[in-house]
Image (cartoon, rainbow, N blue to C red; front, side, top):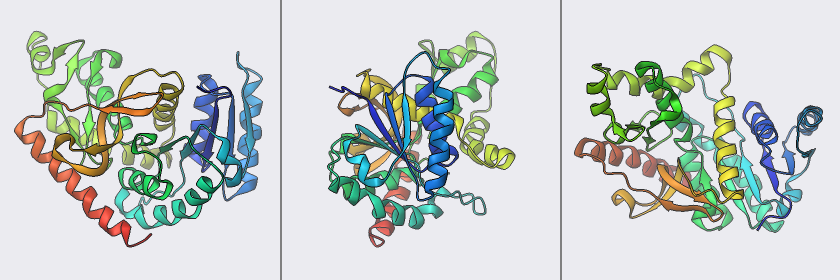
Length: 314
């Protein structure tokens, strides 16, 4: 399906540049085109990446490009934007993000793009919705990173609390990639064993509310310490891109489009989904308990409210 695996990245700051590096190190693609309004920065990032290529076991090309060059890409990663560290609210970034995506998404489509968008820009669920609207691509071809990183943070936090390897834990954060996200503790498993059963086996108790708070605030805590978050989200991006190229049918949390799932319609939000060569091939519906259903409805209500706000900005 893909002869030369070509990925475009728009926005070459901390996140975009590390997406490029992660894609390179993991050998996921053959060519990466970096686009940024700061062309000097994009060129420097491309050179820095190519200096890395000499040490890799596989060949990959990285170059600076322009929006008009992205029409031939298979996948385009959108990582533009700034972080509002004053309010520490991703939703406050909505106006700036919409202004940015409407300045280039239509031009990308005019250039003949027919591939997949992977959206990282915050507020990611709402921005993903508008990238799909502006592009006209099928909903399953426009994928937000959503709660992919938050779910990894949940596994990491539980790993630290339980002293169990992260890879042995299956757990999902759902809903908005923001303050209203929720941990689905009822569906957490440790190699097939439910969380409550596992805690009884090891005779241990943990504060689930504390765990969820740690996960929800993790991004801001990291930002406070180093003024950026970049490594984890770059790997989430790489996982999505690889799942498409390799047709992995991988189950992971992302911002997927709901069409009756969980009783919701016409929104993107963080949910577990199967990702393969057709993009988001299936949104998976977890068996939420009553409290989880109510919380999920609340987080989707926040997304719907901000979609209405965003529609006035287009």
